[in-house]
Image (tube, rainbow, N blue to C red):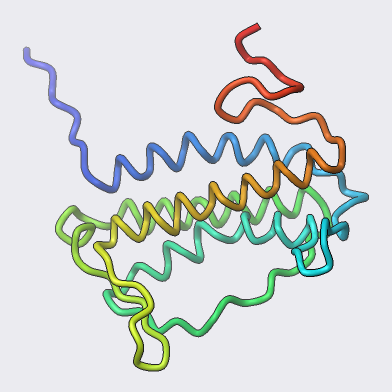
Length: 173
């Protein structure tokens, strides 16, 4: 009997990366100091709680934008202040599962089909859907997760490993 080849689609490759990265994001959420949620490193910066909530809602909100071929962009809503870690983690889990379901339901033909973000008749972004996923769903998340780790470092919170050893944690030791 011959083993069946595993079917790899564009969506499964994106989901595999999402799964790997969600573990890292969750590790950072677990160490957010709840007494510092309103702290911000600069008056123009998001608070720690706002940044965490932005990261938590990002997967589901971004994936939902890519359902239609043309999305009318109405702006970015203000991020609410998180109440506690449990809320952040629960919202992230729900948002993450929503994003995975949307990506999983996209076949390769639609994954390479052009997606446009439009505001007031002006095209803000046009690329294959997979390019949007890569740029906004994944890379945008990594950017904000880097901000979160910087906030935590400034607050003197020992950081877990992200892609290798941190100054505080060595997964290879």
